[in-house]
Length: 114
Length: 115
Image (cartoon, rainbow over the protein chains, first blue to last red):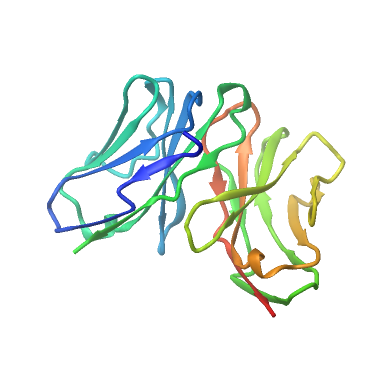
């Protein structure tokens, strides 16, 4: 595709429910990143994929958070048993492996947990 | 661990004037990249400019330029001939060289360009 695509754009859920956020990177980009943007914590790194593997999961805030990537393309970030503090904008970025220092971002998913 | 600090939460500038956004960082690394990203209300982060720490020459992209002071660990962004479309949040970010993974962001500066 022309850019990084994220869906849904907005998601409202009830506390305790599970949610899945999707990221479709730029075609040919092998590296994929998830970040969280919240009022209290600013922009935080969550996880990074090179191909289908995640070398660095240190940024995931709790074991309720997980992510996977299949076929070296689409990635899904899953939050189980959502809490109000999970409310944030979740941003996805991708980069070409030979230019890993330039990350291109999607428009994010705004998650609201009621 | 790296930290990035943007000391100006909000700034405003008149259209066509020049404005400078400040950024300082703390790291023990000698090689790294620094970035300025723009985030308009659409939420999509857009790369404005990039600086490689081993290059002494300051990066320039059209109306955007940086003042990179490695010893002082300072990386300011200058926007010349400000335009209404420059209104956005601006984030300074750091990445370790050859790591290709996480960006560490500052807290952001909200810039308003006034007509």
